[in-house]
Image (spheres, rainbow, N blue to C red):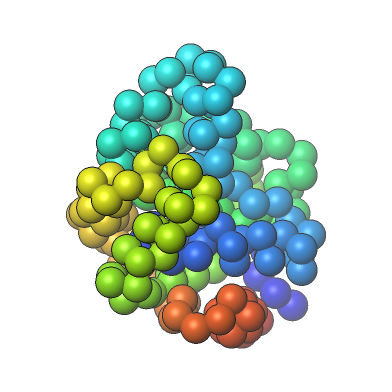
Length: 189
Ligand code: ADP
């Protein structure tokens, strides 16, 4: 049996979104991507979107308060009852603690945190390539540098956080998409 309450953790460009999509198909559980939800909010011009946009464009993390609200609302929806793949949330210790509190309220627990590791030069190369293809507003060199720094300072501590909780699996995110997917499947078994 595969674990079904999952978190994909890793720096920008590690391939979390790609691998999350593969898991949606193989496990039939939803991907919960705060990045995607925030981009949709920006596109819709909602209050959350208006508050988040400047942070996102600069490569800075959006405030915990905004993101926790967005994630909680999503995780309370019916289709996340039997499992979910968190992608891009939590990104700070405060967010991780909020997630713990919410899951406890819902009577469930996170079963696995897959931490994806990729060499930093490779990450920057991938993001610059994505910039050419997708034209995402935050895929420029200045923003990429800020996002890497934000990751190291605020998100990387979560690797230890989940190691201490006994749910951490570290997986190399280098190589083909299929090779990485296989490693993740092994880590979930
Ligand atoms: P990437 O995969 O390149 O790291 P995402 O698509 O996950 O980026 O997120 C894009 C931007 O959205 C982040 O740089 C940040 O501004 C905002 N964001 C997404 N998730 C969070 C979060 N959990 N906490 C704070 N900000 C977030």
